[in-house]
Image (tube, rainbow, N blue to C red; front, side, top):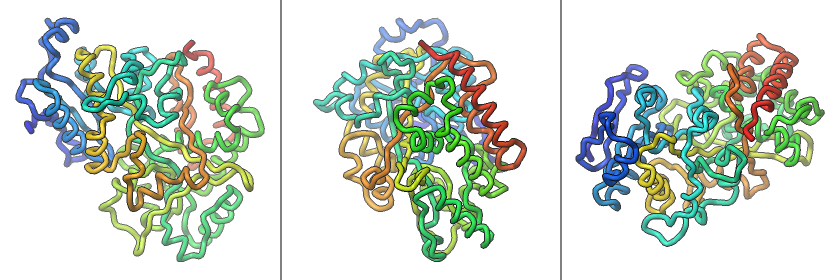
Length: 454
């Protein structure tokens, strides 16, 4: 595999950004500016630009998938750009008019790259990919994807039944903790929020915080699960479309009450480290028995694999406690998305590549190289060890929640994360009261409602 170096930008003093050309020996460079999209497509489109964010799953799985795609497509070179700070790498080129053909970046990122493309109507429609035959197989893409993953407002952001983002790696999100700590103390995993507060008081008496979080971005999955528990399916759907008055209901008030109270039980150093550079310090609190629970996805295990930990540490995972005894316990299923900008040059080849990502061959590479699981029928049957615990949570009674806030036209100065979830830091520090947060929350919701895409 030929490696091509990108700009020598140093990350965190240690990581050099790299542009990886999987396989082929072509120059893989962008056009000089004279070739139009149509002209580039007519020459066979032999070079495909793919950009993927590097997560805890690592970079090697993408490199090997690119190699495998090239091996099955004669004359094709995949130029792969992969980095933990993907936006910083590709933004300058995109501003100059040079866009990747395929991008793997989920909604919910701090810089809202994907949301920006959605709001600007700057995506290539991918509905036809669902009807494509998976390369090398005799099954359609849509027939391999699990139910629910192509019928939600994330992948169908405009409410028109058309798909613009394709679901990729997924994982149940919930509360992670040190199971050994609870066993040692004789504490039970709370099944209701009242039991959670009781545990919080016991832990506080021993100098242990009940809660921490990596960044406020992790409150999206947490919030959606809690909202579903409190509102139920019908009103949950209304809330995601910012229905007028929905946040004044007693059920919504329960959600605000839980988060505000949880803020009072949160380790006080959390907000200072709740950013994309220092978030692992908050995750370390759980490994050091300085905090009990944190919202996260199963990728945290890989992220913290080399981190020191308390003696006997054992990962535990649970759905959110119910808002009332015997009530629903929910777990949001986070999934990443792969998509194509409208400015993609090699559209047909890009769609072929996306279809290939759902092949058994690609799925096996993702699973074995990075531990990444796609929403493909039968994948969970291949799991072992800790992964079984997390992916089978829905088999033990937890309700799976998949949807997210509806897409709107751009609203100046507002994003759902910034308006709804980032203020949690201020709740923890005491710089903002629950009343202030709820008032601002409702005002932002009104603004988003007025900007809903028709």
